[in-house]
Image (cartoon, rainbow, N blue to C red; front, side):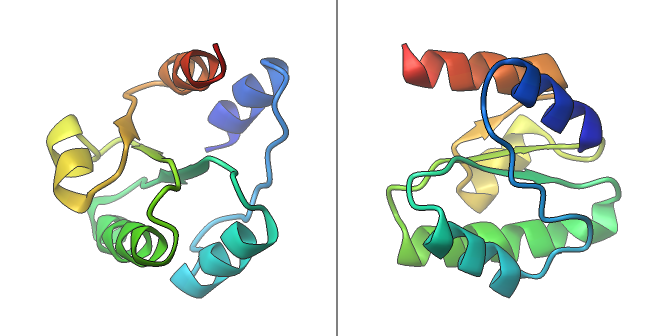
Length: 104
């Protein structure tokens, strides 16, 4: 998470780091306060992936146009598709590339 944030900031974007073990409610509040922001979720362990699914579902229900990218050691492209996220990257550079493609 921290490496991804550093690389994204290095690419010129602002990062709002909500920390670790972030509740769905905290994500929802941040999305409300930062409309149009791209949301990034990371899971370190398979046990944290369930909350990722819950958060993606909640955000997409209330903000269907939102863009959500996911990553982390246990996350795969299949899981990204299964939970309804918009983009998966196996590494920090992929997240930076995705943001660059969105802008240009």
